[in-house]
Image 1 (tube, rainbow, N blue to C red):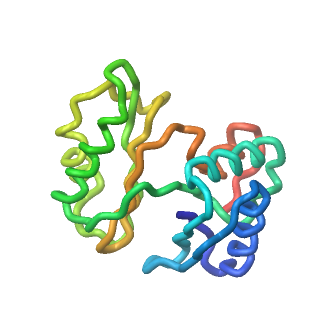
Image 2 (spheres, helix red, strand yellow):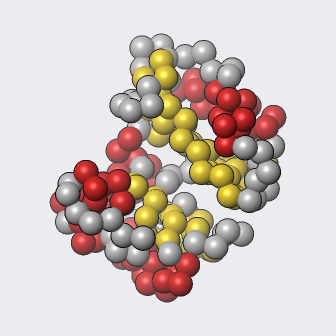
Image 3 (cartoon, rainbow, N blue to C red):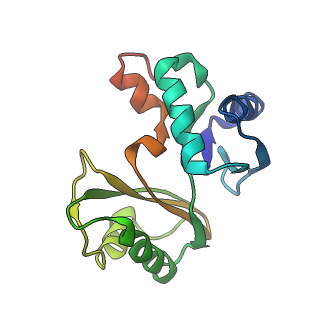
Length: 175
């Protein structure tokens, strides 16, 4: 899943295709989601590795991402209701070791429940590791797009937040 500035959808799509092909994979399917500014993309290889490789390239050459902002690999899609998302969050948490630090990262679009209530509901049954909001080893990602939620258990190097990376290396953020 990749976010972009909606008026620049054509440029963002070209950037997505160039970056994915640049790490030796192919775009099998690219669709705009029900939320303006979000592409749902199926790649030929392991999405986590694809994003990690693109992130490495971006760190070496920050000019590679000018039209896209967040790149998040998705493991599973579920209905965006508390029961289904909580069940999947608990399942994903099995990948967190007892001694690992973790956090939940959520972007909510077109969903009625408050972000705080959702995070509390989804994290309550997780009894593994220790919560660390500043330096987690694992991240349970929840991306809600209306009636559906994309979720994954990722490491920090498997996610791209282009503006956060730009800020960390001393470059101007792009909006």
